Amino acid sequence: MKRWHNTFALVALLSLVALMYVFAESHIVSAILIIAVSGVKFALVAFQFMEVRKAHPIYGIWLLVLFAGFALGGLILIHD
Image 1: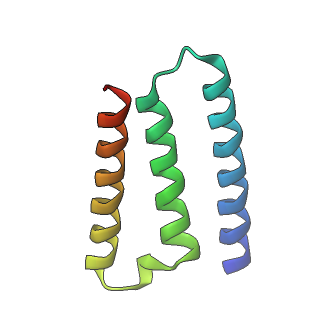
Image 2 (image 1 turned 120 degrees about the vertical axis):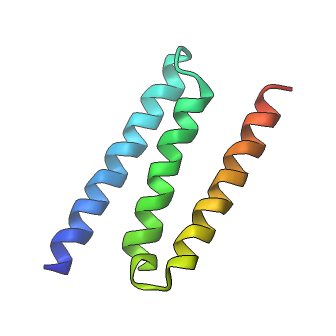
Image 3 (image 1 turned 180 degrees about the vertical axis):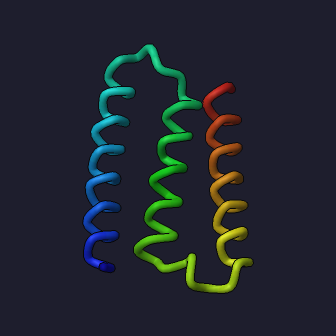
């Protein structure tokens, strides 16, 4: 059963990469949407392949805080 979850996660990641490419080439989509898609990719990799969902809940919260800091820093740099 675990192979099915990994295959699904891989297909989802590849789809999100293709979606980000389309967003980046369209020049219409804002950076906020691109950062949101990268957040979904980040969470999918962390919880599926790094197995954070099996670890102590504080690790999942810490990873979300790290991504929020990354996203906030990216948005600050974009708007300058």
